[in-house]
Length: 252
Length: 252
DNA sequence: TCGACTTTGTGCGTCCGTTCACAAGGGCTT
DNA sequence: AAGCCCTTGTGAACGGACGCACAAAGTCGA
Image (cartoon, rainbow over all chains, first blue to last red; front, side, top):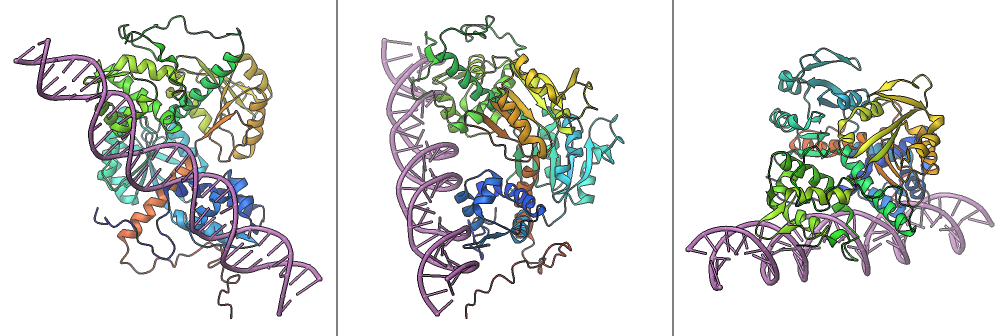
């Protein structure tokens, strides 16, 4: 890290908070909706409602990009769309490689949301020789052996890892070695990467588990309110004190 | 260590921070890995490394569940697995309905990560009559018209919305009206729900856009010496400099 | 031209999450 | 049995995010 200097206030604050960055795609999408409906101007209140956030938060987020609004009027939709898109790098063409063409990789390859926003699926890669050559969304699956070659040829810097957990780290290492510096990881393992490489994780099972946690709380509280309506009492088969019980695997 | 009264962490303990809750599935998965390898005890350092988090954070997270470690030794893997699983509600069976059996819904229905952790796909629902009856992972797709019926019969409280954006809110409303109180939303729209209903959003396109933002930054810093790349040929519909007119700040 | 109205942009208090650093506590060796 | 050493659990400092509330700044009508 040569740039140990934290930030350089170039023009308008170049240091955009991470939380704001995470919401910019949301704003961009909402703005596109307004643009499609022919709306020329939106207030922070309207846009915030469409994006599902607080209006003050929206204004503060946008203020990090610059002063693009007009007091008393609101924001010019087209102008703001362009500014947000530029900030997000959506004016560029981003070639993306998807590694792992299983159920998820298949769905991602067919998912329109990617290709319609500046991302272009440059290649699909899978380790299974039986899958090589298979056409997915008009693109032929290629061998994992050609991974470095593909990344180099297409100048790929963003990759999607949709492999099983067991292969994820090795694939990740090869991606990084080949020059990829941004990874979207769907495998349920924490990828280890050198500094300078960004990893974002999408953990489908965890999301459900988080919901289940809150769901359990709701059910417990509503169950406590009712005297005896226990339709689902505690599991009879569960060990009362699991620390004592030997590891009986296959719990899942 | 003779009592298991930790069922009820003190008045304060009931409120587990949201950030901690979001990491519990991670810990649970890492712990399962240790258990599968026959490890009986892990230190916070080892578990934190496996989960990809700071060890102090891990200890604080676990401390919210109770005092399940042994100083000088670490944590009993099996005991901790059970405690985390119980806290997450993984000891229960959670029937889940997936609405929208497109590419994504298809992949989710086949995704093993769901079914292997206490979640059971109770039904697949799609609005397309042509899809009704189609078998996905051994389960027949059912008509959207039967949604309320299905939810009631299977006692579903968790649903996955994998519909197009245009249908998401209406589906959401019907889900909530039918008794669903937790929703995992893959549609790129912010769902509006009454209080008491939890929504978690998984926005695949946004994740890539966030990566692209940082990627752009990296490329800009490495290409800082180059001449202007701003002369990007904007699309015909897009204003090259949209806000020239409305801004005359000279004021005299 | 002027005043009233509307909406942006932001200063500030508050809260949540992260991390450091260390005392408390338990096992292990002698 | 006693002391050493290890790891947990947590107090406290820190920083970032959020939201209120308001001044600044622009528009619109008279």
